[in-house]
Image (cartoon, rainbow, N blue to C red):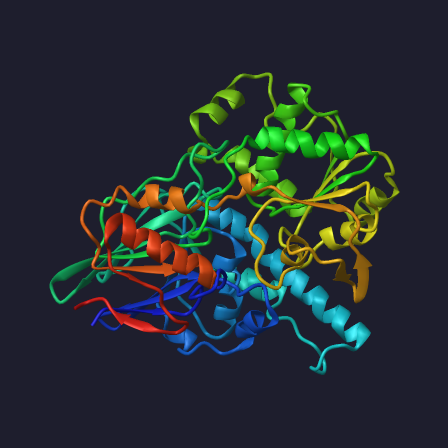
Length: 465
């Protein structure tokens, strides 16, 4: 009996893990970390409800940590099969997974030094060595061709338009002489955005898993360039700096693209721009390498010979800790782009500790902020933000730039679904908070009259009936 179990991203946004079983074989689609609240992060430490050694394969939609960050732990717990992804996702994971492990090792060391952990000694969820062991299990599959994983499973990836290498997956299950088609949306990107191609729509599915991050709302429709120009210009005019917590994959590159355009149009002053993330610098190089993802406009810019589309005119790529610390000495207007995008760790916390108390500065939030994250607290109007075990006053202006989200809004998700010609037997809504899931369930049933289910964590469904 073919079946699916929701081991993550069920009634929450993070931790994507979907276990598909057929003919005695087990395939895990995505293998992400839970992020956000303390309760969610605790799930990363809990043993999986199945033995990791009994999973035969892992299949990835894209490289973001909430879809891949549990892989080192899975290998640590006994998984020994191949991990399938396209080349861009593999190369991004080669940057993201060791970095995730390094941050966890640093957190454990800091907890031991300060003595605030209940564990003696505090340990990381996994180590850099374990992250590299997971990377050894990667196998690259073609970007847009049908790939036979086994006699039971074959997959065809399609462009999702979310980040470099992002795909939604058409999984065909063969069991007892019948075929079942399951579509996994991964994260669906935006339409008419720079750099990447638009999402490709599915044509059909027996069962459909659809992300719902913004399932209850749309993004602002006013000009992103107008919004960025206004924020940067008014902050610079009052002598402040714009601090941007940005995801290293996707958001940093999109920001640099727009800032460069605004500089060339003379709509913002040419300020020093600090990209304070070694990984974001490496990711930007990958964005320029993988031409198969680029849309026509970006490809034309690349071949024009007189344009550097992902670099501002006065950009400073800071790799070392010493270079990062020197940004604290900058007292004139500037733009600081640093990770993490939800203020859950990384160098951005140091910049916020330095800049949040000054009302001349602006903190620009440019992506989804999970419940319990530092970014969500700022978005919700926190007067203080706890950084390095101190309460830092929030006097800087806090600006939410929803136009820069890399996730499709409700109408874009409905547009993506519109290509499906026959009603799926069941649509499962995943990767969303309760209000987003409920809102999108109503939207789908109203627009298409499809049966829609919102799975519970660890709930199993029959795919063969």
